Length: 269
Figure 1 (cartoon, rainbow, N blue to C red):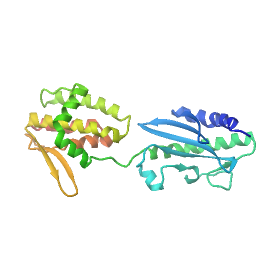
Figure 2 (cartoon, rainbow, N blue to C red; figure 1 turned 90 degrees about the vertical axis):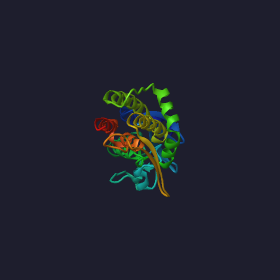
Figure 3 (cartoon, one colour; figure 1 turned 120 degrees about the horizontal axis):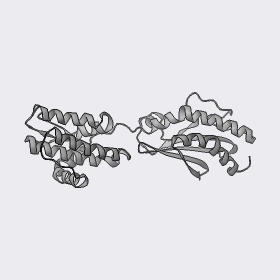
Figure 4 (cartoon, rainbow, N blue to C red; figure 1 turned 30 degrees about the horizontal axis):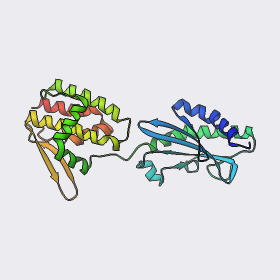
């Protein structure tokens, strides 16, 4: 084994062919490593396999994603998880996280061992690295929503063609058909890229509560907090924080949960 081309072919055969079954794509030999990537729920996950720079007969891997605020990364103290950081793995060298070889047959054996670690532990770690810390409705979002809700509502209407003729079950079901279609698109990208359209949705829903249930936009500001909601609606549920429920539905509860909240307001008006 005296050049990267032969090693690369073996990496692609004994590791690549297996992880490609899970939608990873080979991105070539970059910066002294063989890189594989896939897009998983809008997150780019990377497996990088590379030789030890001081001894080309040793090889290892590392895992990372483009999520910068994952809870797992915070716990580990880094966004890049090297093989040597993974618990309960065994390699054939004295250097933790590295495998050594001298012949092609030994490299094949090593690559099969690495593949097993990647499949049994690495995939799970990549999923953990892909989970950002819980995103939330921020003061900045509320500020924009309160002061520009009419413009944001109109923007969402023009973007989607959504229509409102009243606050009843038929209208609400139609609204959430549109909203769920948009959410499916937004889920393909990061929350940071998607959150402003959630503000547009909140503006649209809030304006319907104002128009059809005689609600009012209410702005709350304190030293540590800023938010807004619709108050004084002609319903048993007089106050609704549209942005909070939309973000809650988007991040964990689902849009059916959000729709039920608005259907309840319709039933109790």
